Image 1 (tube, rainbow, N blue to C red):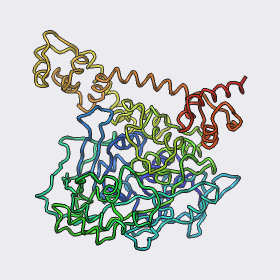
Image 2 (image 1 turned 90 degrees about the vertical axis):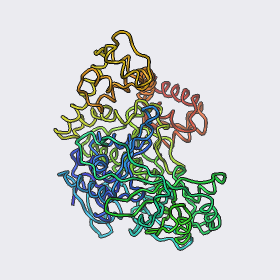
Image 3 (image 1 turned 135 degrees about the horizontal axis):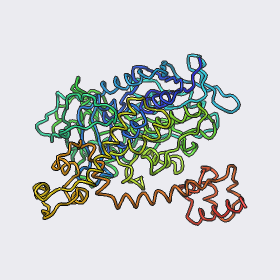
Image 4 (image 1 turned 30 degrees about the horizontal axis):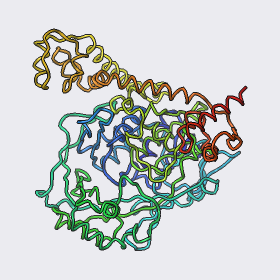
Length: 616
């Protein structure tokens, strides 16, 4: 058997890698241990959130599946941070777990050059120091010029519940992948261990909802995908509960029975998604902790207990669940657990996500030390695309820090590394006003179009959307409203009325007044969704100009290329720490060198001087 690209794994990274590799023209195989779990939401049944929602829209702009599947499966939607600036507006959706998985499978199966096989990768075929294929546990050899590893938590995965012996598994009820991790390590690629966890699930029929705070989704329409308008399923509420003093006392009393605090786990877990044991230990002064009860889907009463991830014994989990007001008689359907797994420090990768040590092998998702569906999807899209470009013999894509949130994440991973599971936040981006969820298509459509990732209908749809946004901007610049038209709207927003005609671009700078509403007053038929981009561009014009100027300066540094094979240890004018970091990371530009921890501004200046001397 021969393919251009093989994707190992069918999770969120694998799904996007398969979608983008096949869209880029590569004959692609997705190899996964279980074809029924492609697109499985292993933990929280939700997509999006802070920075994550922007990544979903970026992946969609390139032709990925996550946004479309979310639109087909969402059972509640909220735009987080609407009261703040647009740089942190974050779309988030609860999804029906089963609908989402089926949607991903359906979206992938329409790709004509994407093939599927059930099996487990065991080792690699290497020719002349490059990837040439894989060998499966079943003894099947499959040749390919590029392989993308997206095995998630399956690499030597081990589940912990209390102090019982660990259970080898990549996910509850599914076998781990051991041989492929050993094969990678045998090629000199460093591997380490992280841990993550999941909370218990409960039977919603046993919850007393009248004592909880109901949280409904936003009113109105929103689609994660730029292409198409999927019919949204029925919307369901979430509920807020509180874990208070009784829960805290139970956990403190049984703390040493936890796998984490009882010594069964030594790996580091995600700081921003801690277990409930971590919360009790790290925040002893907190009187209570939030617990969100989130529906698993339309066809089940099972609820996901967000906020109570744990590795305590099952009987202790049931006890602290019943100590939460509203859950006094709750029945636990599945206990929570912790899982340890292998990852490969991402400083061993090029910014394309290709291995430095083994050309043709790409890494994406939790194998790079990240956490989260969306982070995995962003890496998968980039790795799958670059694997196909490698096969095509074309220059691979490196997304810059001012081009995409995915670019920020990959640059962080490759040049800064990880010492805990990496989670993306808007605060990690220097240019977060440029990298908004509303302009993802505008930022990445030119790339997708140039590489032929979208079909004709998708290109027409994207062009029409961008033109409609431009029309709204031009209308705001060229349309003036009379006092009779504008004043009712201004006064309803608490603003000062005008006494003479004023252009919409000036009026929309006032608090509480948007381009969409002003265009509607003028008689324009502009879609509010298209007017939003124009509104943000006008309101934040000064800030955007500053960020674009700073991004241009960063781009200049990134264009100052460093020569191949530079001997950093021989440059005596830079610190020893900087020499060590530069030699290990091998940046390709002065800009990338400056983003490596331990490389000071003085080191960077002396490096630039040394390189210039070598060239003269």
